[in-house]
Amino acid sequence: RVLIGDVVSAKLTLQDDPSGSVFNLPVKVDSKDGAVTRFAFDLSQKGGPANIAGELGRDKEGIPIISFPDGNAWKKRETGPIGVYWNGSDPKKVMVLRPVKPPQLAVEFRNNGAVTSTGSARAGGSAITFDLPDGKTQGVFSMRDKTLTFDDGVVWTKF
Image 1 (tube, rainbow, N blue to C red):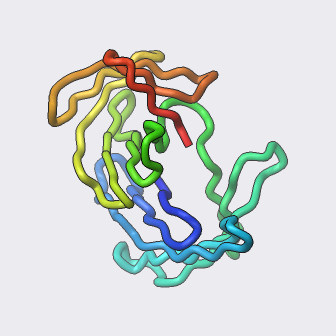
Image 2 (tube, one colour):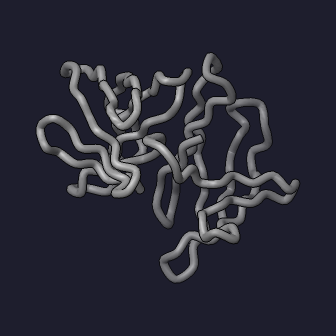
């Protein structure tokens, strides 16, 4: 699951298993005083309900978590390179890394939630080899800094 958005709306990219379909689903966002408090997920594209409420909170370690009425909870993944990154220039332009089949990763570049280009990557320790439409490149993931630094010096920071 990858959730990207702001205090007004969001998109959820969901894939139940590595060989399954990828769904890009709309999400309504409720906020108070500029902070997100609640989500309404529309899972109808994948055969689920159209309006599932999720409350945004934090677990006992302070990690963001979305809790659902049925007791299910989605916890933000805090370890490794999988996640959403931005390069510091525009928060609407992001790079998403999600697992396919370890060590393979899917790479998506998004602008305002819409996928603008895709690629793949292969993780091996902190080094990640990217195969993107404009060629291959190397990146190094820093767990401490939560950054990806590429050969050309560009640094992407994990949200």
